[in-house]
Amino acid sequence: MASQSRFRTRQDSYVGPDEDLRRLEEENQIMRDQLQRYQLQIQSANDQLIMLKQRYQMLINEISMREKAAEEISRIALKEANQIIETAQGNADIIIKEALGSARMVFREIERLTSQTKVMRYDIKLKMDSIGELLNSFQIPEVMNLDYLAKLATEARKEETRTNRQ
Image (cartoon, rainbow, N blue to C red; front, side, top):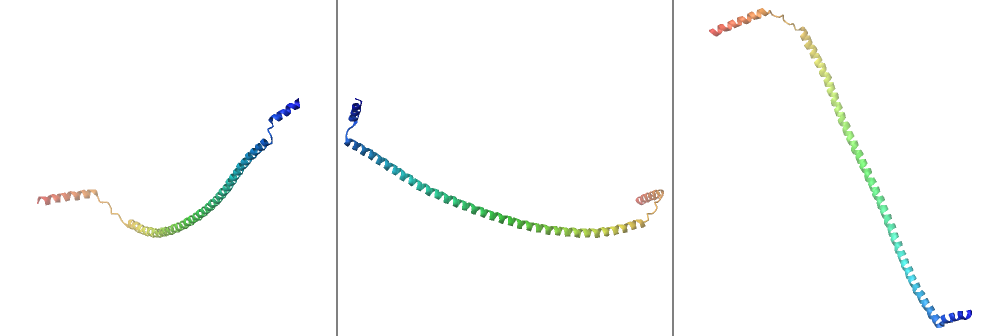
């Protein structure tokens, strides 16, 4: 009985070869459709991969160009910096030469003034020595008697009064 019931189940579920063929064809069509979708997905993925590779190559090229531009800018900046430094050094040399020239002129002027000062000092010393000798040789007269001066003043007043009266 057990085998009968199993057969019946099979027999009840079994519909026939046509139905199996139709079901297999449907499954086959579903699988073909799914395969076609997968192929489209693969194609899309390949297209994206190609596009990404192209984009990647463009980015690599752009990075390379930017690196070259940065190197060029750096080279130009370094060259300009060196030129500025050379110009500054040249200007500094000119300024130093001018300052040294001015210092030489000032030093020569100081030397000239120093020698003139020495000459003047010598002349002044000679004149002062001469004045000293004159002062030493100058004799101071004796002081007059004050009584005599008072007498002269009195006489001068009297004389003045007489001339005023006349």
